[in-house]
Image (cartoon, rainbow, N blue to C red; front, side):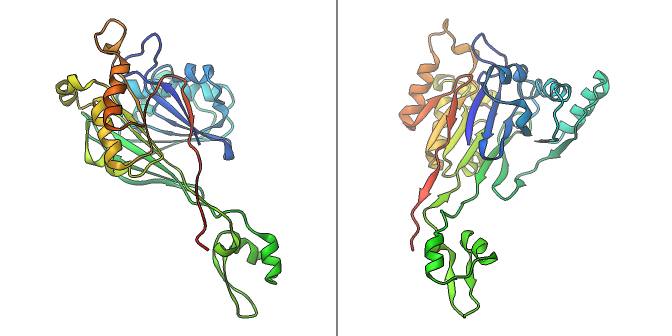
Length: 315
């Protein structure tokens, strides 16, 4: 699981930062999942090492322009490039009619299937390897945070030990590899975990923007390996943050601390903290680190690979 930031500015792009979009690359299945798609996202993809042909799922937090204005252009370009597989899009109510209107008035016809899923708090998607859930955050319009959880995987199967125990090969081995309990024909009970090495604990990635500080963000981010959280404003501009229902750097850090996450990546910065302002983004980083030391400042094209978690088998 590798995160790549394609846009880290809020509201409008700047010379060095595009508006919101984050890609999650899943190399084990040659897929890319996109979170938000601000204007210019497809240009950012072209400037990165990502392959647009691997795009399979897009998760939209809310319908403000700096999070969706790049979506229609990206989808149209995928069609013109001969995107062979379908794309599933997840987002709040209103996303489907928005896309339908865009296709109607631009006379765009997709050459590949697109499915739009309207999300509600709870489970959004699940397959054999991952679950995706969402929670409603606190913003001026309905906005959702997303949590991606990789399912735990049993460690490497000890084939030699299985043979030494006289376990006959066949479908039984598949069950044991999954850590299941198996009843052998001779009456013995074998615990699959006894034949597997170190368990690979699933990684957890959480994406929260746009929102002011709220309890649902803490709930969503519980014990995440990586939390991406907006930090639009500096602490001294907290009043503005409350008025506009955005977070300060300290709010993001408080969420990370309360949720006991491993790493906080702050993003979605107001352009006001540019070179001409008395406060810089380094000041926002220092504010966050005073509360949650393991905080990093995101920038466009920053990539971070979420390391695997390992837990020794108790048997």
